Image (cartoon, one colour):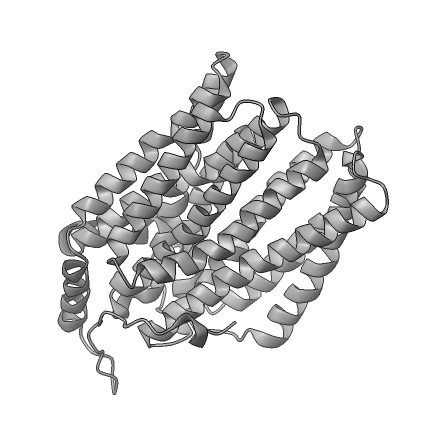
Length: 405
């Protein structure tokens, strides 16, 4: 939990600087390549984890998490630029999320399969070394192809104002963006507030259920791997549940239903899961569906209500607000744990954050109002030379069979 507190605070502080690099320099690709290389280099020594090296590996984990956020900031900056069509962006977003969870599933299946074949089912150190070795090889290979062959350099979005420094302009931009959102994009502002609370609770849930499975259910490393496999498989299903929900509900109501389901399943797990591993696995599948649903619907909602002329700036704010509170629920959990409060009670503390998020989403008002605010922002903006911006329209969903895989 302390690890997540440190990473959450540090990543929140880094994101404004990353936004400044994207907005005011042509160095996005270079920073992405350097961060990818540094990340892969740090993965290698973690292969040699043991009882005598665990502290050094913990430090490396912290560094890779921070570098990973730098890399994520550069990667997310490409998303709004992949297409000017919101419907295409929605399909790409679903495809990326499904691919993310599916490759994680393949990874865990391979690790668990090799560990079982080698007789390492009860050897957590050997399993960890195997997993990290595969992680290092595959990450280095695929990131090498992506960032050396596929991704292209991008120009600066704007010039750095005279007298301003790159280290501080990002924080000034976040401040100005927050004021602009409060004055002209209230629905988007409430969405960011909802995102801050929902993301903090969702990330903390993984910490709590991992602790629960180890301390109360005595999971081995292989059994923990099976739990993560169930989470990830269910997350793929959740991506399509999100798409299906949009045929029946607005994105805001879908997001609320998702968070309500998260809270319901967590409350039921705290009440009924005691020493039953089968029941715990069942709730893991429910949490996985909610996780895939949440990430897909939130990115879709962000893409559709962000004004077209502010894509890059406000996607950076999306990342920032998604991390700004991730340290708080783990801190609450750590305090409760140190006070010898039952983990089952600690799980219930997450319901407060999801409830606040649902209230923030309700305060957004109807989805059509959020779209209208985005339209008005585009209409009020000065058109670029030779390119008159078009108003944002609500995307019409196409059958999932047409989504790219």
